[in-house]
Image 1: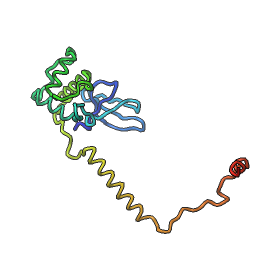
Image 2: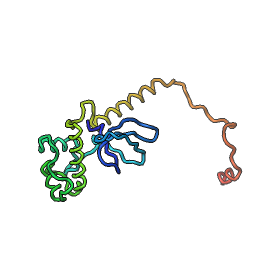
Image 3: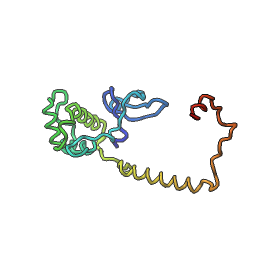
Image 4: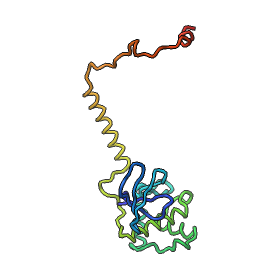
Length: 186
């Protein structure tokens, strides 16, 4: 579900892709349903592609949002995002994801994530799990490699055996300047 939800830099809230133009996307705000264009200069990212740094690895955003949902019992976050200090945000995050990397996950990131959680709940999106059809990056890479191998075998089989590249004749070669020939002879 999170693959369809977008965050656009410089614009508050979350969006859903409605249409695509030549050099832009038309996105619709989840909260007020206004449609706005986003251009190639705007940084647009899917919530399904976001991960939170931990000490050892990265945890997908949907797992963190599910932890927040379990902590808050499917209610909005209890912490006041406007008045919360950095230490309060870090302690809240430690309750949700104990081994998050305190050096790379900033209080603004925590605030943004909790704000996204509240927005998603307000519009009725409570299922943060990825869809079954979605594959992990490793599965996608393996599929792409298999398809490339398959296409290479098919291309070899389809190519005629005696097909050769035509050689350039003297007429098709560009004239060579005399200075170039002299330098080659020396």
